[in-house]
Length: 315
View 1 (spheres, rainbow, N blue to C red):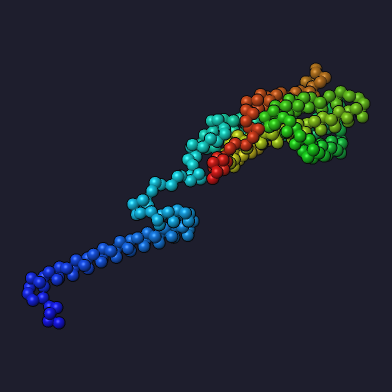
View 2: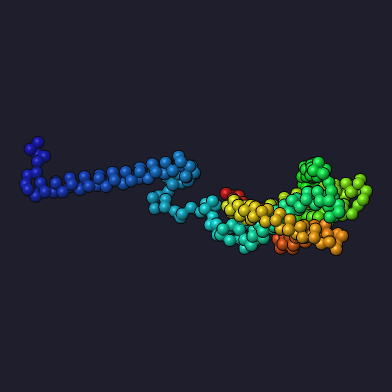
């Protein structure tokens, strides 16, 4: 034991410095090992959570520390900037609608006003006496005509309308339906000029069937056009505005058509005065034709959404 002790103060200082150097080296070695172990644990946790593939984990473990911090991964397809996405509609703004949406919504409200005007004025015309140009029908007869129109509507929607949509499409169906309804409006008053009761009933039923089918086609097409003109995020707002405008039209239209019909009854010098109000409805239908002619054919299909772009990119 006495041989292991330093013999003088210089040797004691040398031994102390050497001991401190060895301790510092061991501490640095332990710190480096601890950092490596912590990084390996982090990579293992990422792989377990699905953030890294097993192959990426193995390559990370084999690579030197300087090569583990590679370039940032590519941006996820779901993080696509909405402003860079092609929406499939020219001129669609940030709100998800454009001028075609406004046109289609106004057309829907105008159609609602025209349809309710005809539906409200027809029973009045049918009840009016023959001396004033009406049909002089009873309430039961008028109800029978309306019931016939209901059966015709159900049959048309189930059997005929899908085939017409495949042939014409939405925008062409709107244009052709507007012209057909303008013609159908002029058939009902012709029945008042027929003396034979059977022939008069045949004309009335044909008028009701043509009127109800053309209106069904028009309403279906215009609603599809409204929804195809805007994106999903704007559909609730657009349909809310359209329904509100249509409700306003349904309030005003019966008053306007009633005033026109009352005025026509005072035209004593014109034998065909019953045609006045129906000519007015027909003219409104032609105005609807001019309005829906502004809608492009691209409204026959719904717009592409962000989800569609992501799916196309393999997201």
